[in-house]
Structures are given as structure tokens and as C-alpha cells.
Image 1 (cartoon, chains in turn brown, orange, green, purple):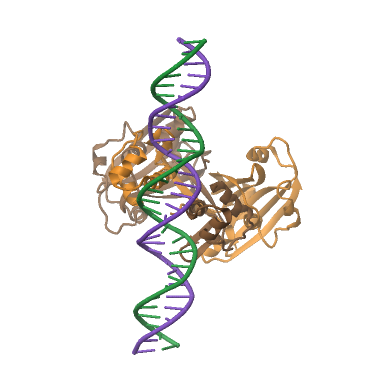
Image 2: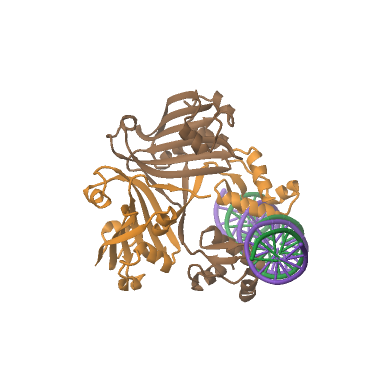
Length: 222
Length: 222
DNA sequence: AATGTTATTATGTACCTACATATTTTGTCA
DNA sequence: TGACAAAATATGTAGGTACATAATAACATT
């Protein structure tokens, strides 16, 4: 039934910006309950095809967007799934007040102590991803007791700290001498960066730049 | 109520792999209807936090993933939203059998004629994104009649051709001399690439590489 | 005409029921 | 023991009802 409704809309040849009948009418036409139409429309709304507004009704998005869902796994898992041997190395672990750039990511105005963790992830002994991370000690005081040599911060946080909001930013940078040295690539090479910041109920958890070696690709699943 | 349930689960301190009570029991505990729990759990399932299986019950994903949703808008829209002036230029429009690389993207075994379209998108007169696209003339014969000088292929396709499947791949490359020339950057500079392939009911529509100028960032919304 | 109040309207959320469906467990028979 | 059928189980989907909520339109008041 849900699929029937989806197809009815998709093949109904509504153009961008067109307003659809109200749920109740659609339900009448398609001979089903309003709640069923509601569920179907919610799906379409989630997938970005239509926009719904109370009282305003439902209309096909006038500016269509491609909505892609990325699955960013734990790095260890990602490496092992490819059949490669995983390893990781803690480069740095220090406590400090975060720089303005980090504060901005967290949308914080008053600074507090955080843990800075830098680590390298390896795939079959080769550098794979360089991780530069800040962890809020106010929100995650337990992190003080973890040394991150056995288990990477990436893994420890994902396994131990639920989050309610996550911002992701993707971009490319050229390797500076430090990145080039750590990742064992030439200076200037194009590197793919995934930047992630997480919160739990508006309290900052962590922000991380994951800098990948050349050849790295992020794919949508599903 | 839904939020209450989400919080109850998030703060319930279930670890990865843990099995949650069945919907009916949760409903009992939280004093609400099963359908409400069902919806809440569907949400959590969609956001990748838990996995549900009929008869198997619900459990927290043992390998947590960060699930991020990207909104990739029409390029014109993206530029205009920033308050910049949009422009675009058709560089090439030719008909040919696609190379193996494109066939592979489409998961096709037998080749058929396609339209290759190259275009530059400008923001305030500066190169913004270079688009290298193949369009299947078998699936979209109407494309033969469009010249793509007035409206970019990017925009025409999104407005006129619905799709049912979309694969996205993101990565970084260094500018070769051709890219450097077209995008007016130095050779070797890091460029962010969004590669997209779409189908309608298993029939290939288009595959495109959108190569962005340095500084480009893709952000998650929501 | 500007302002505030009150309907109206379409979607959002929740409740409850019934049945469908996928999976596993159990039972039965050769 | 092995194979196959039947019961049990947890989630999935749909129906139908009631009320909440946001946005707008209509109306009245000054």
C-alpha cells in the first residue's frame, strides 16, 4: 500500500513546486486510511521528495536535492572488512584549552579543558587515516582515565558515548609537510578529510578531523 | 513521547550488541502504546543506532556507524543561495559509446550510445565546479533534443528525470593539467570530487563527476 | 488601516486493534 | 538422526479515532 502511494505520487507527474491533494483526499482516492497516507508521505518527506507544512499542505520540492546517506564506520572495522590488518598508534595525548577553531565547531562561547588526541590508523602496516581529535572533559570526564593506546579514541567514543547530534563536513586538502610525513606521502598530495563534531543534548563531546591517505573513497550504502 | 523513548534508550546504557526489550514491554514500562514505541524504534533503526529483526528483536548495533545525510542541491541553487551570481558554460557535447569505466559505474554489460556532456559552473564569474557527465540515450532519449547551453544538464536532469536509485562516491584528487586549466587553479592542487550515478528501475540515467574548486565543502544538514 | 482575536485547515502525534510476515523453536514422523 | 510441518514470537503494516499544533484566513475592534 505504501509503495502504491509512492508510485501514485511519482507517476502522477507532479512537477517541482506542485501542490498535492491533502492526505484525507488522497486516502479517499486510493481507498485507504489517512494514517496510511500520512506514513507514506512522511517517507517521501524524509527522502526529500516533498515538503509538508501544517495548514500549508504537501508540495513537491521546488528545488530537488539529491539526498545521500553515508555510513561512516569505526576505522578498525572498515580496515578489517577489507581483509586488511588493522593497527593504530597514539601520537599525542595532551590536555589544553581548545583553540578558537575548535570552540567554533562546538558553537561554544566559554572554553573549558579538553583532551587533544592525535593518532594514526594503519591498514596492513601502512598509514591509512590520521586522526586529530578534541574531547570535552566536561562532558566526558571518563576520557581522562583512558590512555587510548590499546583502543583508539575513535573506537572508545563510539562504543561508550552516545550522541544526539552529529555534524559532518567533507572536503579536500593538500598535504602539508606534517601530514605528508605522518601519512608517508608527498607534500601537496590531495587528501580527503572527514570532519565530525558530536554533541549529547547540546553538550559537546568531540570534534575530529580524519585525514585519509590518497585513494580513499566514501560511498553511500543502500 | 517519541523523544522520551529515544532518551530512555540512549540513557538506558545499553552497549553495542545488547538486546533491548520487545516493543510491547517497552510500551508497558513507558506507559504508552506499542505503535508509539514502534515508531520511535523505526527512527532509531533509520538513524543506524539499532537493528531490528522480525522475531529476532531489537539490538543496539554492534558496529556503530555514523550515519550522515547529505543534501546535494542543484549547483545553480547552491551558488545563488550564497548570494553569488551563477553562470555556466557548455564545454563539450558529444555522442559516443561509453568507456569501460562508465559502463562499470552503471553495472552495464552491453554498451549503447550515450551523450557526453562537459560543463563548467561559475560562481561570480569564477570557475566553481567542473562537471563531466554521461547520459544514457536509451533511457533518456529526450536528452538528444536538449542543447544544455541555456539550462545545465545538472539542472535539466534533476527537474525532468526522476530516479529510483542513486550511488554517490566522494573522494579527493590532485588537479591534472586539464582540470587546472579549466578551473583556473595550479596543477596538483587538491580537488574535492562528488561522483553520482542514477538509475530508474535498473535502467541507467546518468553518471557524473562533479569536480569542485579548492575550498569546497560538503556539509550534512539536520 | 493597524491590531488583536477567533475560526479554519492540514499536518503531526498518539492510542488501540487486527492481521501479515519473517524467523526461530518445537514437535512429529519416518 | 534427519527432514519436514506446525507453533510461537517479535516486528511490520494497515485501519480507524481522537486530539495537538502550526499556519493561515476571517473577523471584529479601536
